[in-house]
Image (spheres, protein in one colour):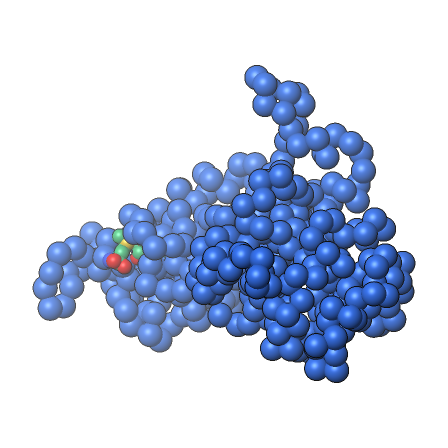
Length: 421
Ligand SMILES: C[S@@+](CC[C@H](N)C(=O)[O-])C[C@H]1O[C@@H](n2cnc3c(N)ncnc32)[C@H](O)[C@@H]1O
């Protein structure tokens, strides 16, 4: 269908319906790529490799049963003839009984010079072709099509978009859903265009503000949220290493929680930091724990920042507020996570690859001192607390005993961030 000279990738489609392929590939970006000679699509009809008057390609299945099966000889002869004429290709059989085609497979195949797609019909192709004559089998998904042609077209289009020059702006390919290689395979963030207000529906204000850093951060978070909600199996499975520096930070008003917090800090092997104006007086109320836990008394936000920078070896320290699951005042807050693993995704900076510095979980009560930027908010789901057996902490609320609600929330965050569940 085009000159092979400058062609980066050539598809050989073996089918009983070449017209179905040729009609589709000549349209749109793919048609243009073929015209420009970047991609080539050649079709071969199995029927041209039959040797009887009726050009028979199928026969009844051995062992009986419904339907017909494509004979192996026209398929194998067709592949051999194509290879003699145009050179060998990576042979792919399209069948529902196969691993699924996805963006990673597309990226792998886009690096090859020649890809062959075998399209079945009826009950499929005689299985000896799968067993002895192909390099791999691919399925489009857990459903059954009438033939392999639509599957071949999907695969051709997905791979061709990854061939240099086919899509005008390569950045748009990288930003697409599943576009990134490596650990993260996210669904794409939402897109909006003019008008900014459509029948009363607004677009997210951050997109109109012109702050590119804020827009990038919003898009990343929106992509993560969408992926968590719609395709949780794609979400990154990162956890904090057991020795990752974590500071549970409280204000002096956390005094009634001292014993429970101290116990948690000891159990979890993290450090407790008391940050605030009355810091100097604090060891008194924590003196029972002195020497048994890692305890830092920090005067203010500046002192905490200095300390974190010293411990961070260049990686950005991150601060998350931990709040009650019922704290509705924070319902609309940005970067709000209801699961620890989501909190971790939100805290990992920029493109998701940057190393994470020391983590501060601000337990309160109240806001962290001004000058400490909050990167995300963790408000655990009530069922998460129950699952961890922590909801009972609700009940411990009489003033004669230290309340342990704060410790329960911190424990939910810590165990989720560091456990593998
Ligand atoms: C009707 S299907 C045969 C289905 C086969 N009997 C089975 O149950 O697995 C005919 C042809 O359509 C193609 N096909 C159907 N579903 C497909 C899918 N999910 N992915 C890739 N190809 C598919 C294959 O080439 C297959 O040989």
